[in-house]
Image (tube, rainbow, N blue to C red; front, side, top):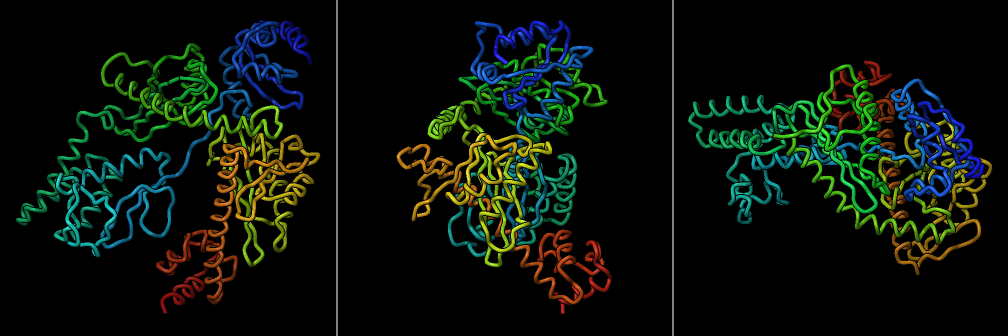
Length: 602
């Protein structure tokens, strides 16, 4: 339909509340909105001479038709809009990406353990978590190191006892000086145990525990130990004074502020639970400059995923009262949503706003460069619009003929790790990169077609394959005639030094070496997808090698070995278990458990 036809259709709509769904010529939903009066709102988009911002202008240019759903009330329209946006993730809506990742606190397996923040678990220590916020983990580790004066240097103990002078941290009383060799292994491990309790328990509980230990030390005339415990208690109490990180009054609170600048916006959320700041979330919205629109969209989407706390403090109230009602209906408890007017709550809102402004400042310089790269890349490839979402694929295989694949995602020029995916090749016998790539892309398209949520639920703007013309040709065979037929696909071609030298498309190679920014950007993508797929292959091979070891045990075949690895994760864990514990794995009988135990302990 032409813009004039769309305008005439919009003017014929009723003056009733409802939701409008705008589609492009490929019948893809590109925008979903709600309106108090459908005819007034929708006709604004297509009115001749109407002036819009850059995003709405592009949306209108791509609009081909629209549908409407009339509702009984504006609140009903808002609820339906939120549900449809979650279902379809339209290109031109303000979308809240899932930034959840797993973070852990590690207590290392050493004679003198260290406490550190980690992104992954392994066999090198005991891990607390997972935690959803890297911010909370870093803050807790730093606080624990500060209170218990734990060493943060790179020296190894007991190897480095007395080899060098203590560092500055020891002299300014920020480190206990383990390097002096004057602290026994038993005393140090007791401190680590207390530090672990501090991380895991409420502040009041750990203070009670430390106080009891201090009194016992005093009764035993161990005044040096009592002094150390006293200092730890003082440090914990001091932590709760004169700052906004720990406050017993803030049991279940969110503080939310929006900052806009340039062509982007950032929403910062500070989350308090149990009297402590446990999480900080920052969401960047590229190309969005309307603070009210960003705030409204964020609140709807954020609290459709997260359980609302009892108290929500905002920098400004949403103009649409239906949003407040929507949030309230997500839980049965009474929720207070307000703008703080005085006291400590105003300080915390300012802290949230400061975090948003600082993130915006950090992001702007890097974003401008990233935007320039994807703009240049889109122009070089002859694309109508810059490729804001890029998916890249690589196949990794081992000598035994098994293969895996990795998929990485770059959003607005930066890695979007929540979208990364791994594939085990199932249908290809032996080593065949072309057939393996065909299987992966076929499975990717199928996941899109069935309407899967997350990264698989949306089309990328561009697909890049780690490979040349052969990979491209094989993928074009399976893409042709599917829902991905119009997604541009290119191969990343390497030179003799394993560096990306060109992109190969259906019409031939495009040299990129002379385009410095694009060259670096494409090289980053190729290096990242190669790293990701190789890492998955190595992990897969390690798991398989462990399973092979288990199949040497009488009565343990591949299926039982797989169940053991699934239940206990590592071979090292299995070696430490008793027969009764081993029987907790699926399919492991008492006889099997005894055979396993005897195999590792005979």
